[in-house]
Length: 397
Image (cartoon, rainbow, N blue to C red; front, top):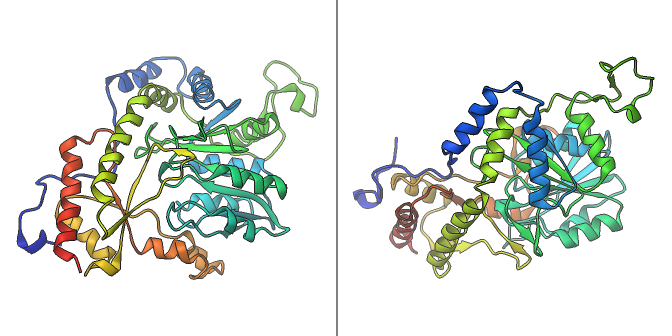
């Protein structure tokens, strides 16, 4: 049963505002229709065109698009040489795929705590977590703010580790003036519908290293190659190919690629609108002592995928769950990103327990994801602000 609005009053909105939503226009639709009418539905020219476009956008030398972001992280971990008995350090405040990619390879995820104000993985905690078994670090650009890549890269170089950037949220962000995607050893973008740019599903790994690129291509497509240099036997004819490793079918369709290409053409306007909404939220909430606004590091010129509002429980008579429900009663449909990964029953079976990352665990108890997407009107944005203010005023301690 839905809770009534505060004190039985009318909600700030009659219709619901959702926390995220894709934006699809006629150009996007026509791009997909053209592929449907073409000779190629998958493994066609749109894949190459998209990979070239992503390299141009980010400055990366190579791009390998995949069926989704999880698949992209999996082949990144494989290409990094992650295997049985290895360890991969990551953050608990993320979607499960950031850690699962280690498990897929037979390795063990190791969780490093977050910075309590930026909510990104703390480089100092990463260094403390390194052991002789550590093979890679998966740094998540939480909410679209870049992880602090410079110290993370320094740590990885000193310990002979690869840095994999889980940039599922980060497309459009710059770190130290450079577009994310060409800085870490490998960077993943996701094209899920609630992301800034969508293909329905889809992902990509970007890298500057040719050796990693060749491995990524193999793992994406069954471990099969037509590259003579990678073959172990003399080709029998133009039809000839070889499976030289155990790979997967993680290929993207040309339909998805066409949609993502069309969406990327709109990235500048997506960036501009998201920044406008974030600026308005920050203005409204920054001087409200009952809530805390995520701090942004000066190195990150951020295009936010998520807007996180953190309540200050000591200044309210309700907790996060009740605040969440109160927003729902005002027809503001929010979410929570994320439940710490090691809280899940599967990870409990592997021996993980609460208490590993105190900053992350405290954060989880206090955060709510507010609506943020390109098509939000100014009135939508003001309705969200009005609802938060209404709840804070009513439940102020």
